Amino acid sequence: MHRSVKFFTSIPRIGAILSVVCLIGVTATVFAESVIRTVFGVSVTHVFEVGGIGLLCLVFLGLGWLYQEGAHLRVGFAVDRLPAKPLRILNLFLHLLSLAFVVFAVKVWWDMTMGTLESGRFYLLSRIPVWPVQMVGVVGWGIMGLAILESIVKQGREIMGKPALDKDK
Image (cartoon, rainbow, N blue to C red):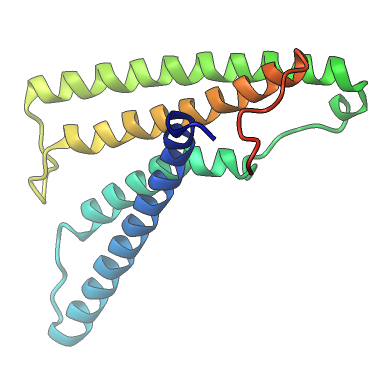
Protein backbone atom coordinates (compact mmCIF):
# COMPACT_ATOMS: atom_id res chain seq x y z
CA MET A 1 0.00 0.00 0.00
CA HIS A 2 1.29 3.48 -0.83
CA ARG A 3 2.59 5.44 2.20
CA SER A 4 0.14 8.35 1.78
CA VAL A 5 -2.82 5.95 1.51
CA LYS A 6 -1.60 4.10 4.60
CA PHE A 7 -1.28 7.40 6.49
CA PHE A 8 -4.81 8.58 5.65
CA THR A 9 -6.37 5.21 6.44
CA SER A 10 -4.62 5.18 9.84
CA ILE A 11 -6.00 8.58 10.95
CA PRO A 12 -9.32 7.09 12.20
CA ARG A 13 -7.31 4.57 14.24
CA ILE A 14 -5.38 7.44 15.85
CA GLY A 15 -8.73 9.08 16.65
CA ALA A 16 -9.88 5.82 18.27
CA ILE A 17 -6.77 5.67 20.44
CA LEU A 18 -7.34 9.27 21.55
CA SER A 19 -10.97 8.35 22.22
CA VAL A 20 -9.84 5.56 24.55
CA VAL A 21 -7.53 8.02 26.31
CA CYS A 22 -10.54 10.30 26.83
CA LEU A 23 -12.56 7.38 28.20
CA ILE A 24 -9.79 6.62 30.69
CA GLY A 25 -9.64 10.30 31.64
CA VAL A 26 -13.40 10.56 32.19
CA THR A 27 -13.41 7.35 34.22
CA ALA A 28 -10.50 8.53 36.36
CA THR A 29 -12.12 11.94 36.91
CA VAL A 30 -15.45 10.45 37.99
CA PHE A 31 -13.68 7.88 40.17
CA ALA A 32 -11.62 10.61 41.87
CA GLU A 33 -14.78 12.65 42.45
CA SER A 34 -16.48 9.63 44.03
CA VAL A 35 -13.54 8.95 46.33
CA ILE A 36 -13.19 12.62 47.36
CA ARG A 37 -16.92 12.90 48.02
CA THR A 38 -16.98 9.66 50.03
CA VAL A 39 -13.80 10.26 52.05
CA PHE A 40 -13.93 14.01 52.61
CA GLY A 41 -17.63 14.72 52.12
CA VAL A 42 -16.81 17.43 49.56
CA SER A 43 -17.79 17.48 45.92
CA VAL A 44 -15.48 18.88 43.23
CA THR A 45 -17.75 21.32 41.42
CA HIS A 46 -16.25 21.23 37.95
CA VAL A 47 -16.23 17.41 37.51
CA PHE A 48 -19.54 17.64 35.67
CA GLU A 49 -18.06 20.02 33.07
CA VAL A 50 -14.81 18.09 32.69
CA GLY A 51 -16.74 14.81 32.34
CA GLY A 52 -18.96 16.34 29.65
CA ILE A 53 -15.93 17.65 27.79
CA GLY A 54 -14.32 14.22 27.97
CA LEU A 55 -17.44 12.52 26.66
CA LEU A 56 -17.68 14.97 23.76
CA CYS A 57 -14.05 14.27 22.86
CA LEU A 58 -14.56 10.53 23.25
CA VAL A 59 -17.52 10.44 20.85
CA PHE A 60 -16.17 12.72 18.15
CA LEU A 61 -12.66 11.29 18.06
CA GLY A 62 -14.04 7.77 17.69
CA LEU A 63 -16.48 8.50 14.83
CA GLY A 64 -14.13 7.74 11.93
CA TRP A 65 -12.88 4.48 13.40
CA LEU A 66 -16.43 3.34 14.14
CA TYR A 67 -17.30 4.06 10.54
CA GLN A 68 -14.30 2.10 9.25
CA GLU A 69 -15.27 -0.87 11.42
CA GLY A 70 -18.90 -0.79 10.21
CA ALA A 71 -20.24 -0.10 13.70
CA HIS A 72 -22.77 2.55 12.62
CA LEU A 73 -26.42 1.63 12.36
CA ARG A 74 -27.93 1.30 8.93
CA VAL A 75 -31.18 0.17 7.39
CA GLY A 76 -30.65 -2.36 4.63
CA PHE A 77 -33.53 -4.80 4.50
CA ALA A 78 -34.94 -3.63 1.12
CA VAL A 79 -31.76 -2.21 -0.39
CA ASP A 80 -29.76 -5.42 0.11
CA ARG A 81 -32.07 -7.21 -2.32
CA LEU A 82 -30.86 -5.10 -5.24
CA PRO A 83 -28.53 -6.69 -7.81
CA ALA A 84 -24.80 -6.13 -7.15
CA LYS A 85 -24.05 -3.27 -9.56
CA PRO A 86 -27.13 -1.09 -8.74
CA LEU A 87 -26.43 -1.73 -5.04
CA ARG A 88 -22.84 -0.51 -5.45
CA ILE A 89 -24.02 2.60 -7.30
CA LEU A 90 -26.66 3.32 -4.64
CA ASN A 91 -24.09 2.82 -1.86
CA LEU A 92 -21.69 5.17 -3.63
CA PHE A 93 -24.44 7.80 -3.95
CA LEU A 94 -25.35 7.46 -0.27
CA HIS A 95 -21.69 7.76 0.74
CA LEU A 96 -21.37 10.90 -1.37
CA LEU A 97 -24.47 12.27 0.34
CA SER A 98 -22.96 11.37 3.73
CA LEU A 99 -19.72 13.09 2.80
CA ALA A 100 -21.66 16.23 1.84
CA PHE A 101 -23.36 16.17 5.24
CA VAL A 102 -20.02 15.74 7.02
CA VAL A 103 -18.53 18.68 5.09
CA PHE A 104 -21.55 20.74 6.16
CA ALA A 105 -21.09 19.62 9.79
CA VAL A 106 -17.39 20.56 9.69
CA LYS A 107 -18.31 24.03 8.43
CA VAL A 108 -21.00 24.51 11.09
CA TRP A 109 -18.68 23.37 13.88
CA TRP A 110 -15.83 25.49 12.49
CA ASP A 111 -18.03 28.60 12.42
CA MET A 112 -19.29 27.88 15.93
CA THR A 113 -15.72 27.36 17.18
CA MET A 114 -14.46 30.59 15.61
CA GLY A 115 -17.40 32.51 17.10
CA THR A 116 -16.62 31.09 20.51
CA LEU A 117 -12.92 31.90 20.13
CA GLU A 118 -13.72 35.51 19.24
CA SER A 119 -16.13 35.86 22.17
CA GLY A 120 -13.62 34.40 24.63
CA ARG A 121 -16.15 32.15 26.38
CA PHE A 122 -15.15 29.80 29.20
CA TYR A 123 -16.97 26.99 30.97
CA LEU A 124 -18.61 28.46 34.03
CA LEU A 125 -17.06 26.45 36.84
CA SER A 126 -13.83 25.00 35.47
CA ARG A 127 -12.82 28.13 33.52
CA ILE A 128 -11.73 25.93 30.59
CA PRO A 129 -11.96 27.79 27.26
CA VAL A 130 -14.86 26.46 25.17
CA TRP A 131 -13.26 26.75 21.72
CA PRO A 132 -10.67 23.92 22.07
CA VAL A 133 -13.43 21.53 23.08
CA GLN A 134 -15.47 22.57 20.06
CA MET A 135 -12.39 22.16 17.85
CA VAL A 136 -12.37 18.48 18.85
CA GLY A 137 -15.79 18.28 17.19
CA VAL A 138 -14.34 19.79 14.02
CA VAL A 139 -11.46 17.27 14.08
CA GLY A 140 -13.82 14.37 14.78
CA TRP A 141 -16.10 15.29 11.87
CA GLY A 142 -12.99 15.67 9.68
CA ILE A 143 -11.78 12.19 10.61
CA MET A 144 -15.23 10.83 9.81
CA GLY A 145 -15.06 12.59 6.43
CA LEU A 146 -11.68 10.96 5.68
CA ALA A 147 -13.09 7.52 6.51
CA ILE A 148 -16.08 8.12 4.21
CA LEU A 149 -13.78 9.42 1.47
CA GLU A 150 -11.66 6.26 1.72
CA SER A 151 -14.81 4.17 1.30
CA ILE A 152 -15.93 6.27 -1.69
CA VAL A 153 -12.59 5.71 -3.42
CA LYS A 154 -12.79 1.95 -2.82
CA GLN A 155 -16.38 1.78 -4.08
CA GLY A 156 -15.59 3.89 -7.14
CA ARG A 157 -12.70 1.61 -8.04
CA GLU A 158 -14.94 -1.47 -7.62
CA ILE A 159 -17.64 0.01 -9.88
CA MET A 160 -15.06 0.83 -12.55
CA GLY A 161 -13.51 -2.64 -12.22
CA LYS A 162 -10.13 -1.35 -11.08
CA PRO A 163 -8.03 -3.18 -8.48
CA ALA A 164 -8.13 -2.03 -4.89
CA LEU A 165 -5.43 0.33 -3.63
CA ASP A 166 -4.57 -1.90 -0.69
CA LYS A 167 -3.50 -5.11 -2.43
CA ASP A 168 -1.26 -6.25 0.37
CA LYS A 169 -4.00 -6.34 3.04
